[in-house]
Length: 289
Image (cartoon, rainbow, N blue to C red; front, side, top):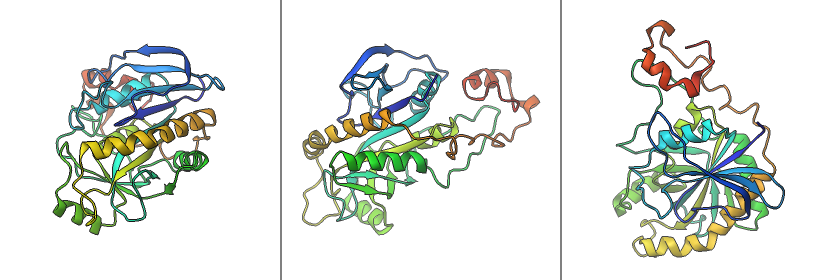
């Protein structure tokens, strides 16, 4: 199988248009069901393959905390995804990132509290390097695609991920802003961590919808405010995804590709058979297990 882009759509992005040969695939994983069926097909314009998974499910049924992140990443890996673009609605924490702008982030701060963030458990220990959580090759390609759409795009920045589903208090927002973060959201962690464990080159396209509540001239963040801005720039997100799918970068040297090399610390003979079976999709036929 050749290169295939998997797009994980966030708030406002529940499908990618201009696809043909569409098949909705429901994937069974050791972690339960993904957020929805994975939509597999090809772009009408050039035949490039693409997968699409709505992170919150169609109809926006799943809250950030309840998303089955492990099942989502596992499903995409099992279906043959080679590149992952995560699209996420965010609040801006910097004056220069205006509502409607696109941001290709390169760092994360994880403040989530109730989410399982690793595939390695139940008798197996794995430690992957995560100092640079975004694939720089994918991020560069995503930024180039974002610029080509005509949208105002920003290269680099830190995404602070909170638990949600509530928006921040004003005090929290001011603290995060003092850290120098660029955007705030609720969904890219532990998604990025799991993508790294699955050795999937991953990049985030963040869609700025508001100035959070730190901005003195802005009203408190509301769903109505978020949706109004999303409807304007979700078209840019679709365009970025299609441009990226049509010209995927060579990620053979991505940090993600060998993330599991020497990562498993557990002696092979000590790994329970049940755990071996659960991780067969990820580690097989690795000699480490």
